[in-house]
Image (cartoon, rainbow, N blue to C red):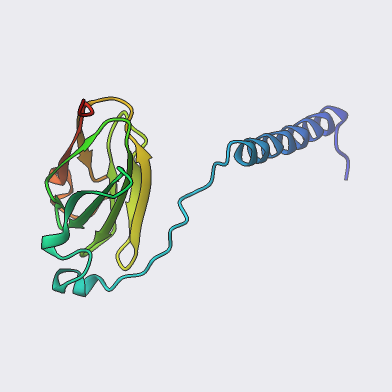
Length: 161
């Protein structure tokens, strides 16, 4: 099979570029400790409301002994519960979310808070919000006919003095 010399050059260039990009991504991921969320914790979605961490009484924002905060939420058909959460700025926040029904996603624009919520698993995000303000929380995975109306509000307030 004859391959023109110009085609060979472009094949070599594309292979070298591919190897270079993969090497650059690997180096960046290792040096900056970047990795996908790896919290794998299973839960029975049918029993979320019957007790435990995700029962209605335990949802919301709680301050931990070390000064950080924990947020526990549920994503259910066309809503996030609680509908409004308020956390302080520049404080470590652990957000744990479970889905009551189908696949959902949660995203706060202009922040690094974005995760997928898979039924049967607990999604956990550790973050620190660095800018005070009000942020909408949107579902970013199509979850049904009411998907467009699935939202909540995140308020990042100035730290107490």
